[in-house]
Amino acid sequence: MVKIGQIKLKNPVMVASGTFGYGIECKDLVDLDKLGAIITKTITLKPRLGNPQPRTFELPYGMINTIGLQNVGLEKFLTEKLPELIKITKTPVIVSIAGEKESEYSEVAKILDKENIAGIEMNISCPNVKGSIISKCKTDTYNVVKSVRKKTKHTLIVKLSPDVTDILEIAKSTESAGADAVSLINTVPALFYKNGNTILGGLSGPCIKHIALRKVYEVAKFLKIPVIGIGGIMNIEDTLEFFKAGAKAIQVGTGNFIDPKIPIKIINGLSFKKMSF
Amino acid sequence: MTFNSPKIAESSKPGQFVMVNIGTATTFLRRPFSICKTNKKTFDILYKVVGCGTEELSKKKSGDSLNIIGPLGNGYKFPILEINKTPILVAGGTGVASLLFFAQKIKEKYKSVKPIVFIGAKNKKEVLLKNEYEKLGFKVIVSTEDGSMGKKGLISNLLSSYLEECCLKQVSAIYSCGPKAMLKEISKIAKKNNVDCFVSLEEYMVCGIGTCMGCVTKTIKNLKTCPELVAGLKIKNEGNNYEYKSVCKDGPVFDAKDIIW
Ligand SMILES: Cc1cc2nc3c(=O)[nH]c(=O)nc-3n(C[C@H](O)[C@H](O)[C@H](O)COP(=O)(O)OP(=O)(O)OC[C@H]3O[C@@H](n4cnc5c(N)ncnc54)[C@H](O)[C@@H]3O)c2cc1C
Ligand SMILES: Cc1cc2nc3c(=O)[nH]c(=O)nc-3n(C[C@H](O)[C@H](O)[C@H](O)COP(=O)(O)O)c2cc1C
Ligand code: FES
Image 1 (cartoon, rainbow over the protein chains, first blue to last red):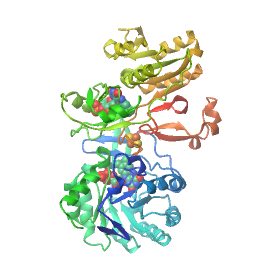
Image 2: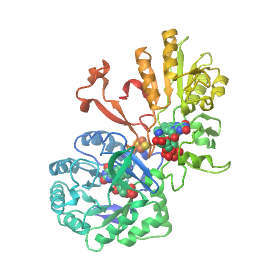
Image 3: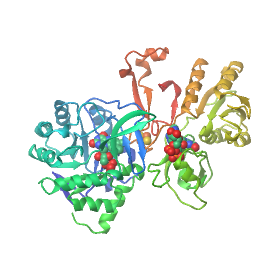
Image 4: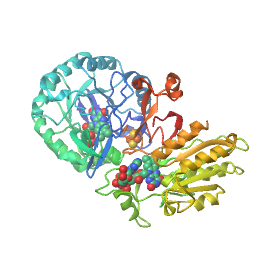
């Protein structure tokens, strides 16, 4: 068992935001009850249309996406998606949230506080929306985490971008603002030329694993709160590397697209190795 | 290419597809292919080699196994066929694949209908599955861009002149699968003739199950609140009137009226 804030996870394997929909879509392919936790697609106060096509680009060892946080919005999420997900699984549900400004984050957190969820993951690191990435600035990071902390008693995880000069400084400011854990990394800002058009997006998959490992390594030793490792995890070997770098738990992202059973295979592998967490 | 998978063969509906993990370093993501026909324990796909994934697929040998997810997507809605009404299928390129499965099921359900299929292709070599449609008792009308088979020109022109001459009351609906430009033309023609039209779209896919929101297509949010679009006018405030729907989960088959081309 692993503890992240107040959440007791039966195993340290979660599915990453944006790669598992609202959980419901995967129910026929994955035994949801086996997962450590489910992180939902990032939810915003109002529905978001997302970016025009093209949105995804394949690379030999990964992909670039510019989805633009398309989501149904908080209201529809709470009336349609969350109740259905909770009905079909007992696995802890962690809701990923984002906003255009600090006040939107805290408003979403306030509304979620009354809901039957296990925790909140603040996405302050999405490269695919207008404006700059909050988690690039330690003061902005501190302020937004602090204001969300005031509004929620749920376990609070903060998801960080690797695209910063000093990741430890950012991670520490989330800790001092009251976060229960940090998750890293979000996608790596990248550029793709498609028929001569310049497309900005986020890079993910096995090609970013070693960047992610390095970021986890750079912060894990110096924080009291747990670090959740994300980035290119495809199998148990990758998972063990993240543990070695200091992660207490991991999330599978792009791996779910290649094989939705990867998280379960990792979980089975860990229990076979009789890992104790 | 035939796959042995009783589960997929039993549960698939026409218009649905499978996501194939080709599993080489150069093709990181799964590739979508329509289910072309089914037998008791097997199902077929028909594919054209266009890039590295399909190239690798063509090297597979009998007895190899592949990791596949399916059947996926919504599929074609069955026409409620009244007596004397005929569905028209319009296929372009490999679009013949998903429509063949539909044709197979139409014939199983309604033995007496005499449906028509229009097949368009670049040249004679790319006119596929013509015999299979004929075996099912479909009337097959072919056009090729170079004139090497059937009438020379685009299949949409052929459909257009056919509709002008035939009795529209006898057409139940048009079902179409093929390149986007063709589908757009077909849906225009259907609209002009006031015939229902269903199109099967293609977009780049990542997950195939509606989780990544990568494969979206622009659709009208709510016809009732969008009078301009109903009247065929340009919409003023686009922001309120469209949304992106996933082709893999909400589609791949859409009512052509809902698509913003
Ligand atoms: C729902 C669905 C059903 C399909 N059914 C069939 C089928 O029955 N038979 C068949 O031959 N093909 C079908 N396709 C298209 C097929 O998935 C692509 O041809 C295939 O993925 C190409 O892979 P590749 O690695 O060989 O080519 P790539 O190297 O990925 O691309 C080669 C070329 O094909 C184009 N291309 C690749 N994928 C797509 C796509 N999804 N949409 C439009 N253009 C694309 C690229 O722009 C490029 O020019 C279907 C696609 C979808 C979405
Ligand atoms: C298609 C796609 C959509 C994503 N959407 C989100 C999102 O909505 N919120 C978020 O916090 N991260 C999102 N991510 C980032 C992933 O959760 C993850 O942090 C990143 O992809 C790195 O992990 P991976 O290499 O295992 O995919 C998305 C990633 C992809 C590929
Ligand atoms: S391919 Fe992922 S949502 Fe359609």
